[in-house]
Length: 138
Image 1 (cartoon, rainbow, N blue to C red):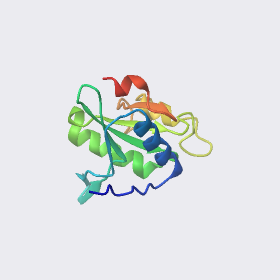
Image 2: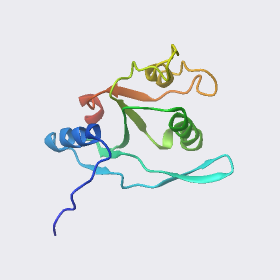
Image 3: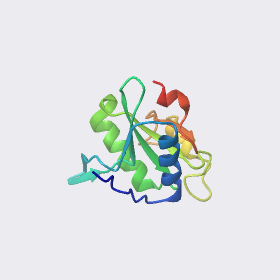
Image 4: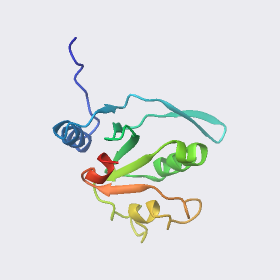
């Protein structure tokens, strides 16, 4: 059976797929549908990568060059709904990027729980540019 060639939405996602393949890591790309609800609007989130660690744990990797407010809010709603049931982690091109022009808040600040309401106190694991070996070896 011939394996379907994956079509990535960005060069960054393709680079991460190559890193995973080279490292012999089993992964799926945009192959899961996770329902969530925007206030009164049922919606679906499609994760970028679902990786399986050495121990068999599944981690969702979301690759972000740009992380706009709507997408941050979507992940907040998903986190509120699923909590620890889903392990979603972010791989940023640059976690020190500001959330918007003129803001002092960075993507890193949001993930560390240091953003303003409604993000204050909500945390996500994150890294820059490549998936940390520690994540793959969990």
